[in-house]
Image (cartoon, rainbow, N blue to C red; front, top):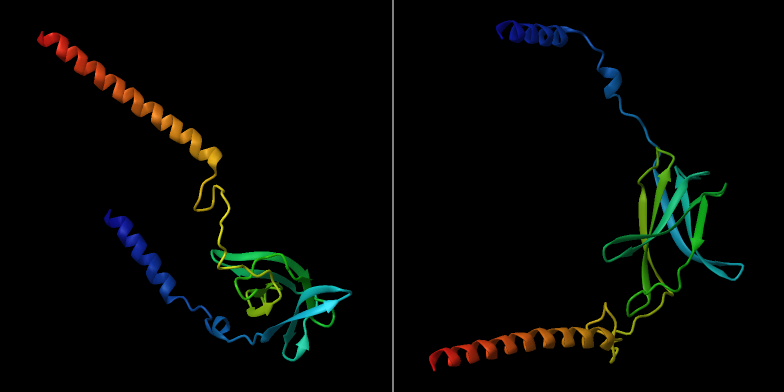
Length: 183
């Protein structure tokens, strides 16, 4: 045991005495600053979400941009696109997604590659999504709604009624047996 401790100490002492050039690892690298701008555009009759990626004032070509919409439990990915020579990438605007009572979607764009720009992201809010009527009077009878469908309620009620009828029958039989035993 003592030999192991002594050996470990000697290895640690030798490594700490070694002269390792640390200055090269500590030199700051200048990474280009990238920015993403989002806009809602119409091209050839289609509504698109367009992102323009610019680094140091110049457009970035062949960068992979991921588009998504912020939802309650995370981000719903709409798609990915590579930037063109002008730094633009685009995906279709999802008009069928519900955007709340005002019809607004919070769009997120994030650079996936190249590694120098990875995880740079921006967010913007756009109008034009499907509006949700908050004051809807009647909710559908569905499994996910507060009111269950009749096709589900009726069998459950019948099964529970059958179980309780069996309990009642057994209880009446037990009472009849007790009456018969007393006489």
